[in-house]
Length: 250
Image 1 (tube, rainbow, N blue to C red):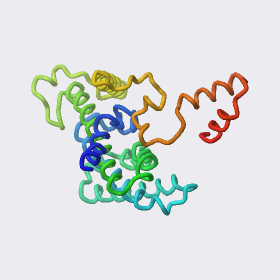
Image 2 (cartoon, rainbow, N blue to C red; image 1 turned 135 degrees about the vertical axis):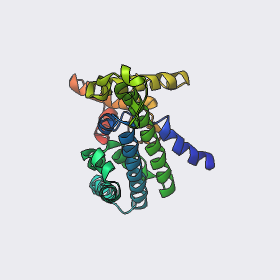
Image 3 (cartoon, rainbow, N blue to C red; image 1 turned 90 degrees about the vertical axis):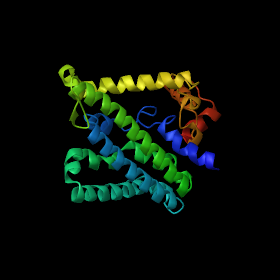
């Protein structure tokens, strides 16, 4: 039991890292990683919202109607984001100003809504809280890694503290949008290479077997859906079984 609980947390940090493996939440990732300080606070804020929303959604999963579950999830997430905003504005105004509009955009962060849909609505409150912790730590870790590279090499500083010698050879473009995409792509490539050496599935496999979230997804294989789409596109006759599966997963 303890190993299962620990696995839920660790899965979000490495195997299913939301930023580096699932490629989610790229907007706040690129926007707030120009400095380590802003990245850390964004990671902390998102983690708090993720844990709280997962717990509440899991607790209410049996009474939330299926037809309105997504709007309900958004309302829950928005409530916690608003609470975090108000607390930061009241007690840490400098951080509130630093994060700016990206703090409010946590409401539509696909990591948080995705975990609510994929995990919290199907699991217990404790497991959902652990999933929130793991995914939050994974998000924070990815932000720290990317922001460290961008700030050290791009601004010659770390957490706002100038690094002697490094500032003379800084690469300013790394703190700008093109540099953000460049660093992000390199970190993802390194992560994929490291997981591949450990026996991970190659990223070119887009079937359910190649999806890090396959163990919690009950939908039809992506390859089957693609096959259905190709048959329809080519105006080829679709078997009754394939048609039923396609309509069920449309």
